[in-house]
Length: 67
Image (cartoon, rainbow, N blue to C red; front, top):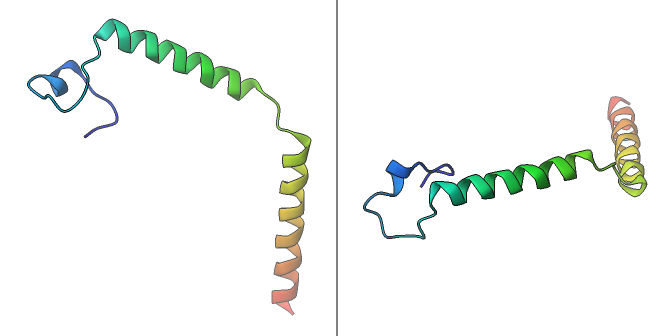
């Protein structure tokens, strides 16, 4: 089954709930709002620190492999 359904995809199929177009519009709008909110959040300092440590470990691993 496709991640994206059209009305044609669900005609004659009884394997799941049927969501009317108006419902899909509301769901799509709410998901977009949630995505935009998450996208606008900053990256926590703890996560940035972990990424920096990972970069440093990869640089150190590359230096030791070159020897």
